[in-house]
Amino acid sequence: MHVEFLLEEESAQEALAKLAPQLLPDGCTARFHAFQGKRRLLAKLPERLRGYASWLPTDWRIVVLLDADSDDCRALKARLEHAATSVGLFTKTAPGFRGGFTVLNRLAVEELEAWFFGDVAALRSVYPRLPASLGSKSAYRDPDAVRGGTWEALERVLQAAGYYPSGLPKIEAAGKIAAAMDLDVNRSGSFRCFVEGLRALCESE
Picture 1 (cartoon, rainbow, N blue to C red):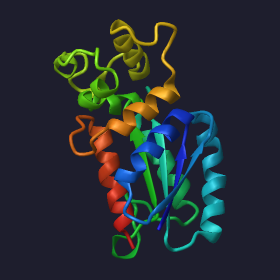
Picture 2: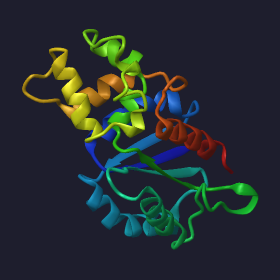
Picture 3: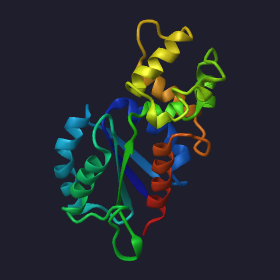
Picture 4: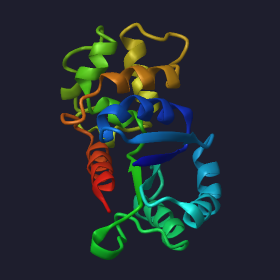
């Protein structure tokens, strides 16, 4: 099996590349495509999926992952679904015969960094000066509900602990944190939904 990941930026590519050994079954290969921004990915997605639909091998799968940001999640997800179904590709939401599907559309709510807040142990293994109480603080208890942008929140938390005084290097941090994450303990609902969906995708016929 092979999985194509369509992602909006390089930090997501770095994180997924580190998570892939835990996420994918043995022998499964993966390729990661970063589109230099959400708007660019959304603009190019219909054409990209149309191209896949014309030649996709039966053992290939496609994952589309976007940050929800402040967008309406239902509307954004519907846009992703339409891009796939309009070219004849089955999705987890709109599967084919016997529930089989080829495309998994998922959103990180509100940004990828929420997934990092969902695993405080991973954050502290990379940045040990972070307080052990981080996950119990009201502002971070629900990673998908962090206010004011999770990227900015992560930068503030790390800088308060003495890291990255000149600014958070998103790609570097994403790779380090993702490599330390435990798939089964994350408190982010959108991360758990992503993992569940990817496992189902890899089992789909």
